[in-house]
Image (cartoon, rainbow, N blue to C red; front, side, top):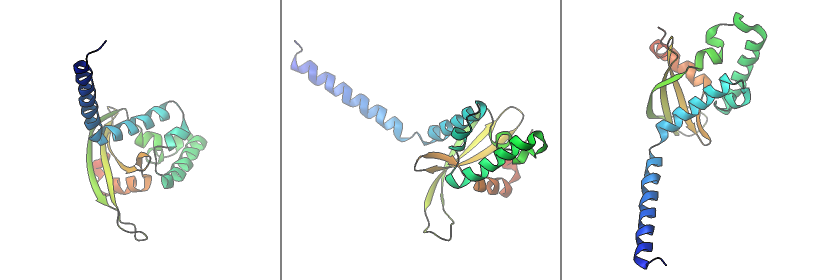
Length: 159
């Protein structure tokens, strides 16, 4: 039979463990954004187009789906910048920077967005990928990504 003192000690250890592991999860936004990107890369590499598209905002999914259809039709004849796989799917996440932005949509109230900027590379190219935190996880907004690159060409670095 376990003594009451041992039960209290064991319960205290369990509570402390839960608190420690729970607090680790609170600052996981960088890791979550990185994992969302790496999941997209995995799905792109394994040919799971539907799962790859899930890494984009709902509005962006239609655009990316159209670009992928063009890629299937025209192959290497399309511009690399218009190919979602070649422009967004790189192997290694070098860094993640978190920030917040006010939304600038004229049709709705201003909303604060959580934004992650991932610096990714494949050895030949280095790019910065902008992701926004949505209700269902971190996503790339393809239209905002193009604006992000257009604002500063250094975000789309090539060796």
